[in-house]
Image: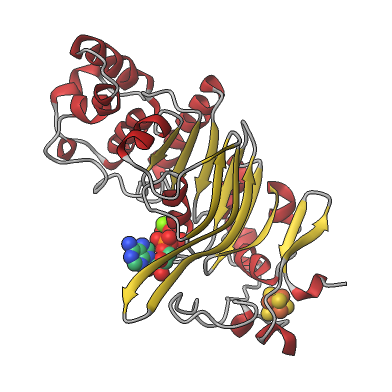
Length: 315
Ligand SMILES: Nc1ncnc2c1ncn2[C@@H]1O[C@H](COP(=O)(O)OP(=O)(O)OP(=O)(O)O)[C@@H](O)[C@H]1O
Ligand code: SF4
Ligand SMILES: [Mg+2]
């Protein structure tokens, strides 16, 4: 459904300084799958999502949607056309809803832009409020009158009302209480199945990603380091970074968790402004070799449908 080739997104800081937020990412997203995207804070997950949705222009590279190459920078008409297919649910349900708009205006905006009448919009908003488990009478209220979980449901209704085929869910539950996280995940899964959606699911919580995703992509400092079927990446990670990331993920069973030996990932993720030469993980990698500091590893096959970018797999 989506083919991304050599995608780069650099933010210009002025004075010849650039944030290499997404640096040479190539990736395919298959129709009807849930692709999980994980990585530490600052690894470029949201930026990648926003570039795919056209919210940021690309620096270079191409993105195709159903074999059609998307423009480098969207014009208003491109947006209207593409946002019918591609929608995004944002990381923060508090800042992503306009506080001065009513729920009806927020959810109905996509339909208004497409020329639906106010009667049609009201009817559809009512239907969608019910589908996401909110009372249709809430339509005239403002975002501050809702809890975090309810706001995220409003964000979901806003994205789904135009009946998209591809939805980017950017950490849709990380700002929510644990008690409502599972409800929101179940709602997304139900909608995915009933609408036949394809999802890019960005998250921090690896066990949650493993649970919902068909495949997992691991990002580190703007690059993909590993990609494969969810269970394979989770139970048999190949890249040294993915291994440490998965090892540092707490287990659900408190007894097993307490008995486990943790190896924290040493050091901090380097600045994306001064990207180190060679492998970006070399400064923190327990298996780093000399060449890792000068040669950039390419993503290569480590299994039939499993790949990793690491010199340990060079022939
Ligand atoms: N508009 C912007 N201008 C300049 N730098 C930016 C901008 N947006 C993001 N960045 C930088 O790009 C890098 C990637 O940020 P991004 O938000 O994509 O990371 P992330 O993986 O989504 O992190 P998190 O898990 O914290 O949400 C970071 O270093 C961030 O500071
Ligand atoms: S390429 Fe080298 S430094 Fe990078 S992850 Fe592999 S072994 Fe570690
Ligand atoms: Mg983010």
